[in-house]
Image (cartoon, rainbow, N blue to C red; front, side, top):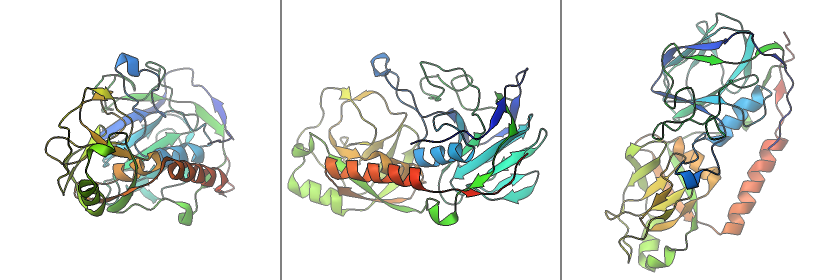
Length: 329
């Protein structure tokens, strides 16, 4: 995915940017993720909904990997200390600037002293708050991605707190743009997740695989950035456990109780449950936008079809045109 920077950015001479007024339920600094550190026991982190994250940065005319804030559920408020441009994408969290209701999926000029607030979502779970030039965060092991379980990334290796200061550049000139409504992702409470069968799938009988792919599951109480534990039809396997091995993003583990677990960005790096397959990367974002009680079905696809779907979505992102608001400051 490519993006052009259309902003003139000036680094502040002191540590200014935004100050957190309300931290919300779970608000985390994220860039695209931490890779190449599995040998150290460090997982990827990064945005759960990578498409919404990329759009937030693109709407601020940023490179797509720069640091933004992932806001889960809502209740977040932040005060600008500099003049800049922001954008919010993702779940339908009510957005206001100085008390005035604003649309998501577009960029806005903000001035020093402006209050930006995100209410609580009723559709979707995670939103992304980006700023022109990205937040200036010191990397940990090559990334700013916050993984609370490991205590790394972000400001202090944990979620944002009241009075945290997030440094960023001053934007002296920027083009304001938006994504047309018909091009915005649609969030709902029912999703179809496409799976590439794992090399362990032969340990599941044809009857068990038929049950798995014909059943509806619901998101259980245990759902977070590590993974989603599902509730529904129990699935059995002819092995109860395996030697611990590396776990990929989207892996669908079947533990002893037969209830599937789909592993996400903050998953452990190794595990010992058999896996029936792996949810493709463009579908894990849909799962990560489901709250407890959300409904899920699975569909098996080939690796070649998964590759074509991912390339199709990449092409669509790069070719989707934004709407210029023809406003400069």
